[in-house]
Image 1 (cartoon, rainbow, N blue to C red):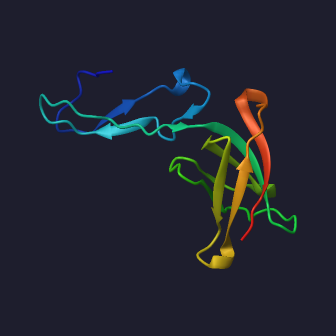
Image 2 (image 1 turned 45 degrees about the horizontal axis):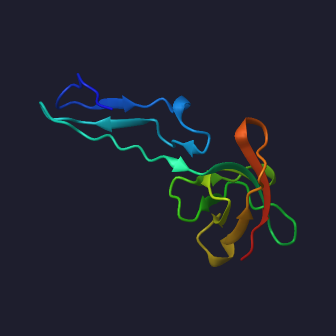
Length: 137
């Protein structure tokens, strides 16, 4: 789509309404700032995350949850990142049916782990899938 009437040489906000996106797409940012020159056409880039929305419970091999505040990332998806909450729960978007998660809670080798995730075929309420995974490493 094309937007007119942007103010040249000033910061303009370009917004997109995510309500019309399909269930398997998410936008981490719905506003992009642009600064056009007079008469210019500028591109506002939005970076959607396409894949399943998953509420994942991450446990260590001994059964304890991954530390609160750890950062979990979907491999191959820059937008698929979340912060681990209590009980090892993390909400991730852009998850493929099967994929790998990398979790970090510090800089050391002992403060990270990886997990293979298999998303179930059936979604729960609001189209969010629930899964459990063991984080090793």
